[in-house]
Image 1: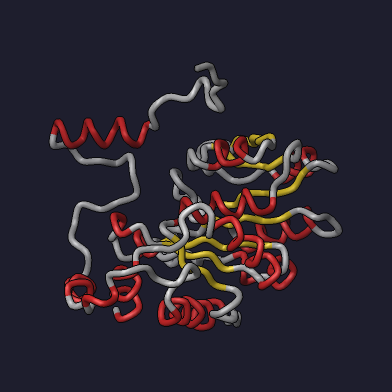
Image 2: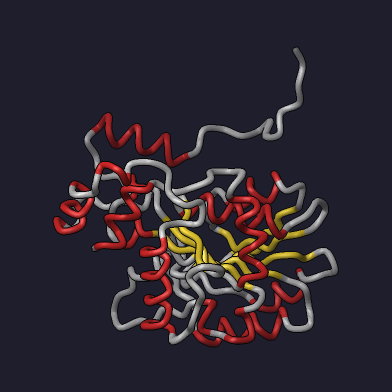
Length: 274
């Protein structure tokens, strides 16, 4: 049997290589976003007390209680209101949410702007959509966006810009001015913004995390992705979420239901209770 590989030059992800080495050598593992301390005991207790009947499939969009908690978080922290039924979806981790948003919105021969260094799932997900990744390097030492380079990269094929703040792996955070610059770039276009905000609560020294949903000018063209695993250091639970307006969310859910269907039910119950 003969076939053509979609990723002929792909190698094992560096995350797997470094994690295997860390386990073998009993070394600190700085390659992946997980800590070396235990999750909150109250969260573990909530998981252990999940009723047996809730160890079956959950709703494909996530249990209502957890979607409502996400809505409450955006209301409390960002003063934005979302409908938990039509604008919030619980996912089996943030990576499948990123993948689903890209597959839902990006078509063959279109372009997606990615800021490097970047999470290593962005570009392969774009390639699987048949599209092209346009890479813009963030320059050391501050790893800020060169907005002139962004403007120069925009053309009729540009379909999406992927934002990651707080940034993995540098820790750089977007300022309010960065977001205002993005608003200026995408106005009067059909460009969608995918905002990877999985480290939204790992903020230090009085810094402020601005979500894409803080800006009304972006809300109707944006996906915000979050991760309970990163926030509560239960990365093995593979539970994240996506927030978008109802029109975009419908497209997102069409992809998600054919990619993973639902997130882990007991984990959702425990997180909602916690």
